[in-house]
Image (cartoon, rainbow, N blue to C red; front, top):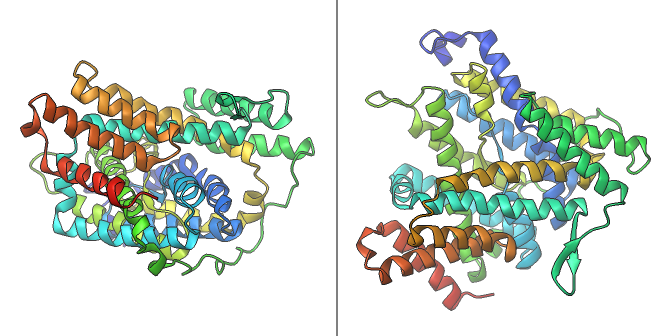
Length: 430
């Protein structure tokens, strides 16, 4: 049955190899079951329900990826998009988390339509490489400032906006220790380094009496507080127009880039040979819609899937193993509830650093490419908004190309996105 479903021989792999690859990928991405509830609960969402929604969305997305596309790629609520959901849409703009979930649902439907009509491919082809790299790096910087704030390392300062926190606080010291554990283990190629770092800080925090221990295993909590709580009518409010636009754009770039990158590493996309890219794109777009109904921010393909590919994963059986492990994780909700914010902060900070690696792909010798890219990356943390970073980048890109006589080199997709952001600032300013 497994051979018929996943074509193991054709892909030169075995059940044992696929299982090991699935476990490897799960260990590298399972930090999301601790980090996502921590971020989304800041909006007023029930932490335990978000934990369940995170596990179910990851399991469902990975299962669809495995059974439909037969690709070894894990799915889960995406880093960056959860921060945009919590800290920009809800905290800064004042929308309710129910309206934000509605926006995720609508973006998922739009994402699905863009995928099946081929517009998604047109958008990807049209957005310049410099902006794509800057978007990833900017989201990294945005995650970085959130992480430093959650750790207590960066605090508000009336004179300078931000300043250094009290480095003698136990939580701050544990966060710093957690970061070095994660970075050190990852440098030594230890699987699950991020998860180990989170758990190490949590255990130390409990031993020192800084946070309560709530146990490890229990029956899964209720999903009811977030299940089908999305407010579609509220999400259709004019002020949320650009929120949906940002969700769609980041989903398009992040998910597609990850899928293609990991699939190429696994040898699943080769010139002149048929691939399951279309089915994989279908899988990630349907996962977003399902995740919003369960009660979590946008679900996307995880770049950590590359670790499973490195371990030999070549088929959807790897993704199915990931799905099963996320379902098993439903039974450790007390442990997830015991994790303090300063334990997940080092994970956020480390992921932020990894995302900033994208800056090397920007052409710094061309001002019309590098300046919009720099604005994109800088505006995200400094205005506390991924949306503003995207807007600054796209608008400045087309303006600089136009005034330097290079307007014809700009793809229509870039002009379209820039125009939508101009309309947003002109008519829908909050």
